[in-house]
Image 1 (cartoon, rainbow, N blue to C red):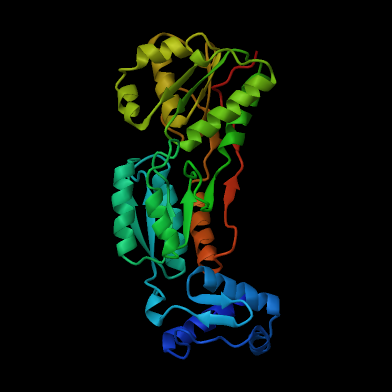
Image 2: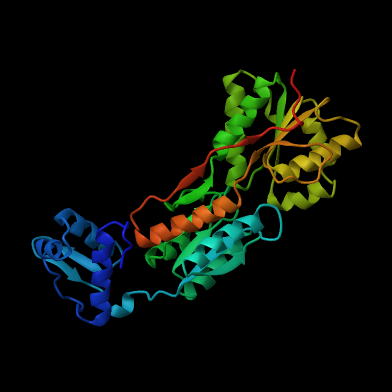
Length: 360
């Protein structure tokens, strides 16, 4: 049954499912009229229509004009609850991911659910395998961080299967490209990028460069926000001041194999917007090697606020981490209770000022 503060139509939805499972309502049987159901549950005809519409979208009921609403699926078609939630993330063992997982697990455990955790390492073929496996495991819901969210998506067939199976799903960190009409819980990355650009401009910087990740939507949105801030103030210099990298390039960057090209792109700037704190820390070390001081010679602003070891405290935008994990789990549970609910959430940027940006 629905909780005290749940929408009234949830009680009716659950009751109809129970009648189908018990065999009281068989395939082809006509449901009681909207007036009869409304009187039985002390709800309006509109609320009855809301409940039957959701069950119709799930393939359990069929509305026939001028005749009524009929059962069109047997009890075997109603997926039994397993109390298992699939959680698919790109990574686990470092950066923001441990805190996100803790947040998700805390909410799911409190509500009596088990978490099936898997990692794609930002590889679409790995994601396809994981989604196929989870679909076969009869899970109740999914939390997914889309792999390579910044490039045209190739696993759309699995999301169609998820929708067809009636499995509630919420994205974390990003949507897919193109959008799959699945709710998401993420940062407002565009606004964060725009805020980073405005912050540097406010502090007197005119030659602003950037280093962004191209195959994740977060990188593209942060870039877009920053670029539009520069355009607004007529400070957009040249695309050559923007360095793009992919998941596969990270190891090359950290090994120093791309140092020369990165310096060539960024070296004439007074300030750099970094995709995240990991890249910002790398740049601090790189500029230290060539005797450039931060922020005296060059300023850096980034995203995530991970308090990584660095020669200087980074000015950065905080990532909610554990709070985002809790929120995505809460929103998924709401969606499981009410499939028509809009559960998308955007976290606004939260600037943490330290000493990595110089004022002119």
